[in-house]
Image (cartoon, rainbow, N blue to C red; front, side, top):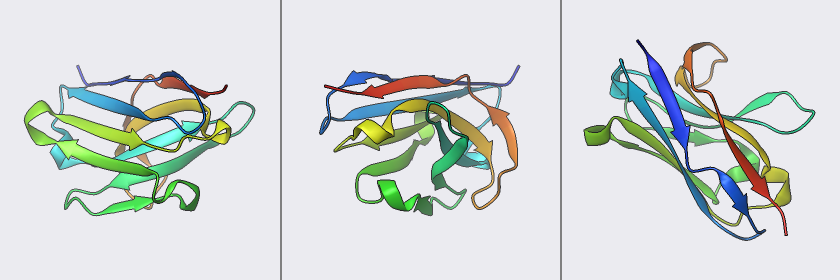
Amino acid sequence: QVQLVESGGGLVQPGGSLRLSCLGSGLTLDYYDMRWVRQAPGKEREGIACINVRNRTEYLESVKGRFTISRDKAKNTVHLQMHSLKPEDTGTYYCAAGYCGSDYVNYWGQGTQVTVSS
């Protein structure tokens, strides 16, 4: 059974940091482009970061310089390190196995909530 399980979300003050993790089971994440997708309250999902199979990364403009996506091959995990968090970063964060530059997704995680508030 294929699963993507996110963890690391929570409540953080503006300016704070969080690291999200996406653990894969039943699939090898290195074989997929991996994306982090955010859904803010009342808004549609938007892709915020992607790492392709060659480890090339791309980011939504609003998170560039603050967020970093990376792989841990040994742990079959993808991380999203987030710094300088802002209230507008609040939302549910999903990891997805699919394709950078495309909305097509092979597998979704269940999501982890990030709330940035004082």
